[in-house]
Image 1 (cartoon, rainbow, N blue to C red):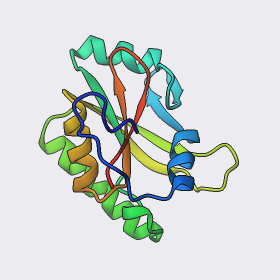
Image 2: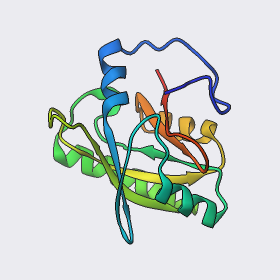
Image 3: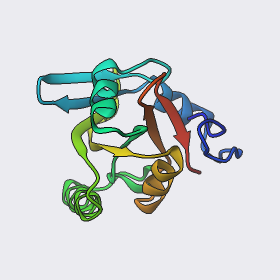
Image 4: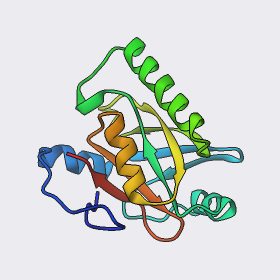
Length: 151
């Protein structure tokens, strides 16, 4: 993620370059009521951005609670973590949509995720950190999706 963009302080990531490249190459799919939209880093997301403008939000974080710090967990642990993420988002009244993130080669099992409408990239980073994630995707209401590195 462009850690220096949109109000998220720049820092040097401790993540391996290959992992960052994998995050940049991944797909991030959102379940909109009228069908899915696949988001890529560096590209706009027209349907997601129309939804964001319609609800008056500056952007959204694509975030998972699965596999904290990139350490694989079993299905039960990931399901419990996602339940905590959903409860956290619901308690704050943040609009959200279900999604999943994966890769074209199928090397990663798609991870359940949420697209959470927020006011700023710093909120996206805080949400990702609260669930021990290495990165989140920030999708602004205008412009391309960005990767935000958290460690």
